Image (cartoon, rainbow, N blue to C red; front, side):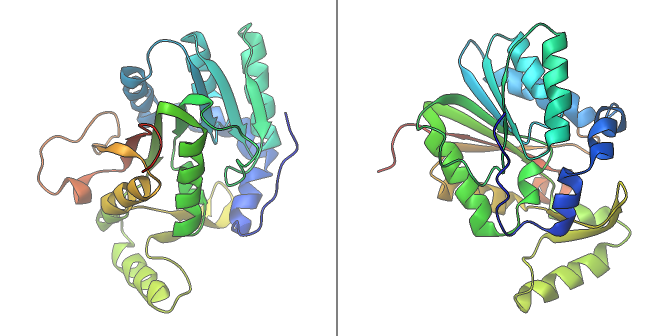
Length: 260
């Protein structure tokens, strides 16, 4: 487990989240009934077959690391939280398996070799914790670099237009639009009043087009968007306004060899 690289630019609420022992220790219990966790695993199993190497960015307490180790892959789990990684390591050891864990900001992948991994995952809106459109695109570009020629990237994000169903929808949309217009934040930046005891928790929530554009700009091909249904336990049925109705997205992109 390498030393954490604290790069500038993260929101203070993100750092509070990362450095909270309590959040890590309660993570599995807090999310034990999250239907998204069942669905995203089933979805990934449709694409991730056979052997190979997988890197899970923002691996948390290791749910996907453990799952794909059991599937026969060689897995690297990357996370900024030493407490999350400690719990993940204990899980893997208890299962009699072995993974590589790296304590790192996902914006710092420079020392990871080119073309190493067959699959990369970034689930549960972890990429949304990175502020700045350009910074998120650079993460996607670096993920593409470290993937094998036919490697695949899977990334989950919340849908900003689904907030039409939230009680504070009008206030948030107006505030977000004004902050974007005056250059303070980007449209889609959300500051939750409190999240698990952390005030003003930052999260960027995407539109379908933003997710698609980010992956294409990073160089991915055959980009595909999975629209989540309301319970996030399956794909949204019907084509009507899926980009608005979806309770989040999972973007899938394939490297498909060098750019050019």
